[in-house]
Image (cartoon, rainbow over all chains, first blue to last red; front, side, top):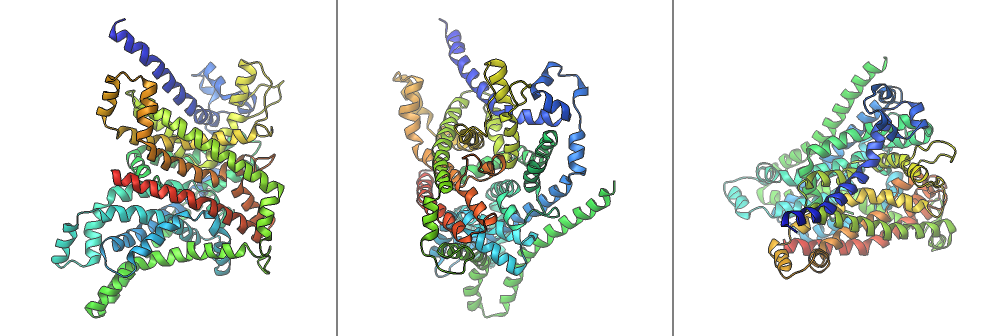
Length: 286
Length: 330
């Protein structure tokens, strides 16, 4: 057998397996997308794959589901709520972690090592451990159902991991860089904002994407601290409520699900490189 | 549509909230740093580090440390946290039938989700490594991670949809069963023998991408010379995989596996949205949620939380230690 033939024969099964697995993997999502473009009777009557019998028959597609879901069901509001919750819950923990990471790495103070170990140790605490007490305190302080409350909660949950990652990164920056800055009379604040921060952009970017996706897709934290009121519910909460209430209206559910996925998917695809980097350094996060 | 003016004010509100929230925090540090400049230099030096770490410590103490200690103490109190009941809640946790089901299910989740996510992730990482369209494959497999658990649950509802046998099937799996294999459609969420596996499959779909990415990076870091030398020595693909690749990335496999194990212990969203723990699919996190909000028994809910914590600590310790090992090698 010639080499080329042998190569082709041995690699064809490989391609088949890979393409097969990938195909199966994306099938559920494709099914959802197609279903969201069909009418109610179609969705209940036949499986979504039947659009392939006449793929170019455009009368079987419609945007009505999306329109309905965005206006009547109030998903536009939920989208804004998700943004309101997610952006600060991403920026604040990173800011707090960055300051602290710099201090742990380049500032002298008693108990520095011990404190760092304790902070990282807090990674073991599962969300569930904090729900009851925090909710009670929030109720007393009037923070439950407010955005401030959930920003605080997400910040708390995201900090141990952020500090761990940033401390490692900032600590590995070259020492002479900072030494010469201090010699030139730079204060810690200046060294932090002009040196440490700009140089940490890759780590911060990965962290930001990771945290953004995690908060955007979160259901439990929003459910507990925000409650389900229409005014403040984010997309995940809205979607799960719709699963209960629209149980029979699957055609609407599919459009709703896609609306909730749109932003994370865009973020994911456009910033994939940073995300993967973040996953690699972040494989510790539970 | 009267909705329109309202949404502009909503957008403005959102922007304002974001700016105030974020700007407020950053100006706090700058303000504090400025304020201490009125003190003598050596005092400044001693105080400044605490300004940098202060907010961190305060937030963590409030959000994580205090609640943890409080929950532990709550677990020894009664329903409304008024009187001491000793180990009664823990006793309940380990004897109540619903709880026992939850334990069994979490064990199923743990074993199956980890095995399949890591196994599939490994296989795909190795295979994808050899094709030119590797990035596309990896992106597609990784995609589910960008989707929320709730979104994934909606997607999979469609896959598992059930219709009586005499009507046309709309669910992917049942359609295959009925149209291609000539079998009866199955109520995937209803059949007690199958429903847990159906839920776990969704979990695997979500986690495999993560495993694959990490393992793929690890595989790529194996030096090409080692592989070449093995091939020259006549090793076939199978041996290459089991004798060389797997041992060399074993610590990465451990880190990935422990991460998935922890995530399976905390499994909540998928069960909550698809079955809410009915018909034998209950899991610990779900039970805790029910105790908290349905039965309002805070003692029991706390006991469940503590059990979760105790289960996670050793696994997390392994995770961190392995990660340090990895870092040291890099």
